[in-house]
Length: 139
Image (cartoon, rainbow, N blue to C red; front, side, top):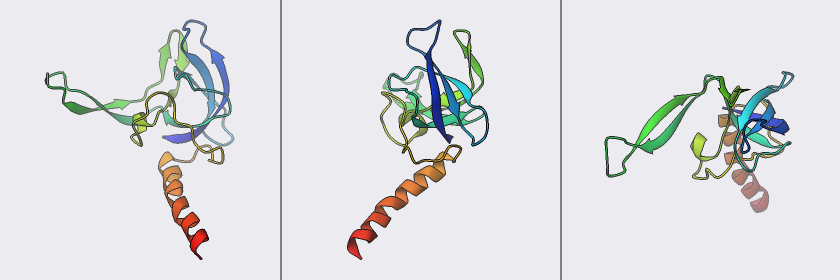
């Protein structure tokens, strides 16, 4: 999962609730096309992107347990077609990448985040901020 920048959003011609997004995922490289159905997607957003080959773990109901127990299901992101348009990855919500419970839309990252940065590095930098801010206020 890397930091991506949505550079263009157009309506999917075959699906009312889907958008075709051109997403920069590496500095100097051409954007990749990703199909996204999130209601909050827009041009200019910095977002977490699961690139082709990424494995994501989802908590899903266990089909063998009527009590509603959840189990982990690993999904490998593949290049796919959605209603005739190619999708080369997945723009993720907090829930999909395991950093929160919000699945209502895609996660918006800081506008200062750098395209192509591994998401784990982005999170590590965020965790440093409260410590730095705390030191600035107490020195």
